[in-house]
Image (cartoon, rainbow, N blue to C red):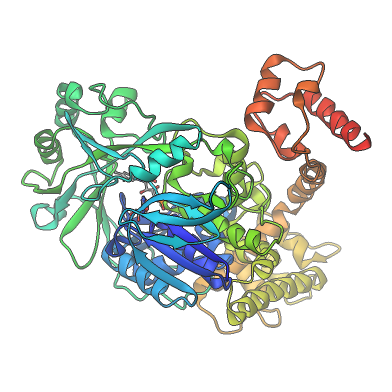
Length: 627
Ligand SMILES: Cc1cc2nc3c(=O)[nH]c(=O)nc-3n(C[C@H](O)[C@H](O)[C@H](O)COP(=O)(O)OP(=O)(O)OC[C@H]3O[C@@H](n4cnc5c(N)ncnc54)[C@H](O)[C@@H]3O)c2cc1C
């Protein structure tokens, strides 16, 4: 019987092991400490703009993260609510303690899945071959397997830095993974050092909350998952505070003692999660910086200070935190710190996230140079799916850039690579109009069927929802709005002159029609008023207006994409020698050799590869086929 081993119980590992087992494959999740499965190393929250999109996509494909955050979230907010359906992003604070136990419980109850505590020391191949046969643990035992998904996060040769101190560790309080790191390095894989950092945690009782600005969550809270019945946890507010001139003075006086600025770190850090040292140095005119005060759990007294990531010495951190209004008597429970770790160049991965030249091995998560729970989870899901499909000799699942943010992320990683921790942003998705997160279920329905990881009831729920949307759209196309029709008074009230009449769809395309007008019209259609929560109906109405209003742009985009997609289907033979390509610059040649694109589409997206080079490459592929 074929077996998959997933190394690591972080956000990538949970998804890889869960989906592999859901697809019916015998799977073992091996991790250093079973109690730390699903640990949130940094901020206790899931989602946001771009990241929230990916959580909904992985949920639509049978992933775990959406359901886990719904079960354990204590503060939900839809970000960018007023900026339109395409860029809206759900975000939630998790009860970190409950998130860990919910993740572990989910895995323990998944058929075909075993959990095993232990540290992977290396991969094992059959004598004298490159045929993978197991994973060796530090205690000398071997877990036999045919495919491995490595999701080791920040642990490979991890080193924590705080002030002038440094410590070998994978995360605060947990050991680094050195044996596995050395084996992977010794295989000749290109690697580099990356870094990230986290904020101090403060005791709740030591903060004067009445002096902070309150930030309530949405009421009612809206779930992430397409399959959650509701939000079971009590909801709590977050708070906001701003840095003061004293905070800035303390940071500036002590910059030379920060690991980040004292020259103790060689790795490259995440541009979009800067430390407080970075913020004061790089944005000197900003004056003050916003800090979010977020509860870590309903079961503990720990409060997370989002936006205050630092590697200053602990005593300086105490002074810095106490310079915030309402924090004068603050007690730090855990100081912030920076961490530096090995990551591997994702240009060495195929589009299915398997490692080039090493059969049976997939990498997912922070090991590939990304940062963030959602990025890790998305890769874990795709790596898990593709490991199983490889063992079953099926074609890999590769999502297009126009199909999912997950597709954008993987294509960016394996085509362009990344020289700093990669984080998802909506700006990375050139086709974002077609990637609204509330439509992820319908958009990925065909892939979900192909993967086969959704329960039949869940699949049926998606099919029902998609069919309902189509039925409503058809009714809108057919319903005719005239002065004497039931829609007439609503249209006239909205300031629309009804001379020759128009379809309800055309009426909805008019910007004068606001949400309340649309609701009044939709209430007249058959089936619209079926019982369901108000927020679901409001979301369906917004989606309908969005789809109708943006249809012309979408059609133009679809025509453009057809051309691009054709290129994505032109495979570059693996034995094609790009050195035989005459008429291109040395720089383009070097890029093609380094990035080794698998399709003409991928080659066209490598920064610096010109349209002329693509035409020549196309000709070379043709010629190689006809030889
Ligand atoms: C200090 C710090 C600050 C961070 N700051 C941010 C931030 O500001 N913003 C942000 O988006 N993200 C941040 N992150 C990153 C975020 O935690 C990760 O992106 C995310 O957790 C990655 O998920 P993962 O599954 O790849 O790895 P992890 O969640 O790190 O999980 C790795 C898992 O692998 C296991 N493991 C490792 N090696 C072995 C082995 N040899 N054998 C068995 N098990 C092994 C570990 O025990 C762990 O369970 C930070 C992380 C840290 C540590």
